[in-house]
Image (cartoon, rainbow, N blue to C red; front, side, top):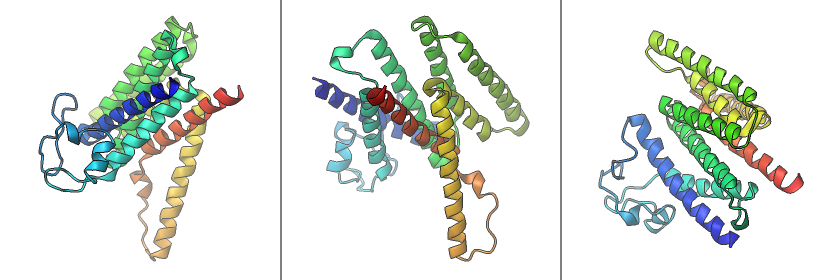
Length: 271
């Protein structure tokens, strides 16, 4: 029976992944993500049911739009697969099974699903546009507050630890508001900090520290690779602001999910 449960979770994960691709494409363009029907970004033809089946539609249509035959970017297929796999791994490492479907387990699973939505959409948008969308940050904050209420009321967790995080939220939001008024634009750094706070609330300090370390290593490797490529191409004047073009939110998201899976697996098999 657990196999059927995980198959269902994988399918739900791919459905979420399909929504993630839509959100990553539309949110930066200020387009509606809930009521507007899905359409081909090339010919704008409304997609039917057979065009919207996660994973399978991409395979059966050979990665092309059924109407204009334009190639569909592989990222849609990859994100749906990764989303499905991530949902299954998280559920498995959290010991979610048919025999263990208690209300608290379902609540923890639901909050984790909402958190993964935040991570996938935030990272996807940042990778494409190098931008932490304010609406996604606010979504993460609201889900975090709901999660804190759940932990303190239902699981009787200590509120003092989370008060510190809430104070950090308030300070960064005030700073972001001041930045917005002064420079008429959102601060990318503030968005990254808000993302890190949300990650710490959901995954804990240990995972967050490892996330920062892994992100720092990945960014350093990226910078080193870029410098080596410039040396190989004999570029005399290297752009000093290359670091400003790195999608730090994307690296944070990937590192956080990997570290979360590692810690959950460690607790499942060794503790």
